[in-house]
Image (tube, rainbow, N blue to C red; front, side):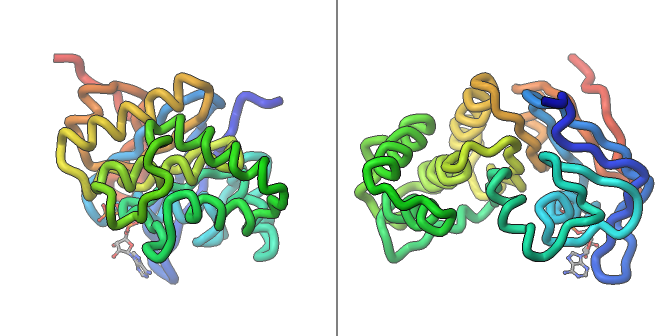
Length: 227
Ligand SMILES: Nc1ncnc2c1ncn2[C@@H]1O[C@H](COP(=O)(O)OP(=O)(O)OP(=O)(O)O)[C@@H](O)[C@H]1O
């Protein structure tokens, strides 16, 4: 298995006809925890969207979990997303069903059939995020931090090779952000690769790791200063 899980070479990223990022050279290895930072509007979300097939890559080279982003066909997008765990700022849980049913819904939609296997997978991922006892609750009965932990559990359901988290702490207060970050750190220590877009510099200082920065239509690797 190759070490590299994500690689972009001389890639350009567009939103419709506007160039957002150019000459993007990025490499993420299996097991890495990588931040993507940058001021609002500099292209973090556009970068992430390109990685999960929401924006087509039309210039340069890109490969992610063994998919060639330049050759990605519409019908391959669900297969790609099954190999990725995607976490958004706004949780995106279904409010009309319990946490367990939210997770079961995703498993069924991704081809799982065996009820026992589904139940045990749901328990396993909820346990990983410290939410095993809350599976019977509805999303609106949980705090923001708990909802985000469930969203992380949902991202883990199909044993993703890479987790893409776009501002996962963006809607959370500082203390809750740290709790969610601890969950992501644990998951990373257990072998998951994580790319996380954030503008929360406090988290970067507390949990230093490889950092990419979007600025002036470019993506640079930045060296964090230790004070
Ligand atoms: N659907 C769209 N169509 C056209 N332009 C867009 C679209 N979405 C975003 N943009 C533009 O692309 C640029 C990059 O936006 P993007 O959302 O990637 O930035 P970001 O760094 O993620 O910002 P934020 O931190 O606010 O989420 C912005 O100038 C934005 O106006």
